[in-house]
Length: 118
Image (cartoon, rainbow, N blue to C red; front, side, top):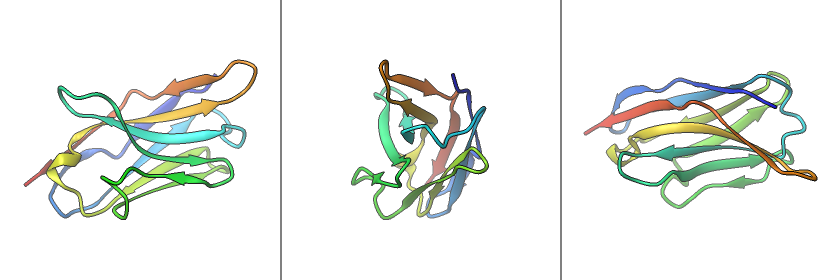
């Protein structure tokens, strides 16, 4: 089991930056994939960024070049640096952890709101 707690959301203007943080309740060294997803009102939850435990990255085109995910295994933290924010980035952002094994496990945080005004 792992509990995830996000922080760092808020209200910013277009073009500004935010850094989201995700604190895990235990070591993330063995967690295969850490990621960020987001969900805007009336839309499905979508991938924002993932990072594996061997530092492979995935970003959708919508955030590539603007967002950067990182993980600090020593601090059990995952971060999402968001630059050049756009109004369409407005959503609730969720931290996610995937542990692969005999039975795969997926964990979610409670989410943090990011609002970008034009």
